[in-house]
Every structure is written in C-alpha cells, then in structure tokens.
Length: 128
Image (cartoon, rainbow, N blue to C red; front, side):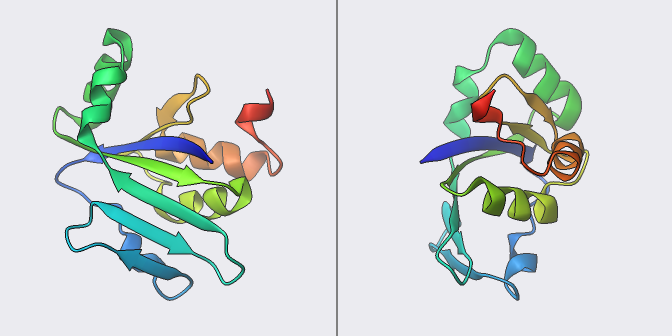
C-alpha cells in the first residue's frame, strides 16, 4: 500500500460527500477514517491524523502555513491503485486551498497536483 498526505484548512472540508453518487463510501462515526471504493474493488482510504505535521521540516511548514494557514486538517490517504487515487484527487483536490504531499519530494497545491495528473496520464511518482 502507498500513501499521500492531504492538508486543508480546518475551516473547510474535502467535500467527500460529493463522491457518494459514483462510489461506495464508508465513514466511521466521527469522520476519522473514510473508505472510498469503486465497483471493481479499488479503494482510497482517508485517515485523519493531524499529528503528521510533526514530521515536516521548517521550510515545509512555512509553505503549508503560508498557503493554507496555521489551522490545518491532515489526512493520510492510503491507496493501491494510482489511477483510482488520481481519479478521486481530480474530483476533490483541484483547488488552491489544499496541499498534497506525494511522499516523493513533491509538496504542492491541490490544483497543481491535479494539473500534473491531467497532463501526465501515466505519471507514477514512485517510478521516478
């Protein structure tokens, strides 16, 4: 399993409910874990974990704070199928007030990440 990290302002949300018509969504009672699955078994799992911020260095933290503010909500996003992750990301992350860390030296705004996904259909950041 692989993962990315999504940061968004604590005052906003990821609007995952907008995906309900296209996918199966399972949430726990307090939205700490959200599972999104398509009809062929691909999944993306969102795990709310604000403590992840402690693993970022000073320059990364400065970028995050300058981009979305000091109060952030953080999700670790687990996935196996990168194409399904990109599909979900294009629906929820194509916005300026969100940051994605692909865990391979790219930390960027959601809209820039979405642009890369659209422009490079076969892009898999883990393959170099």
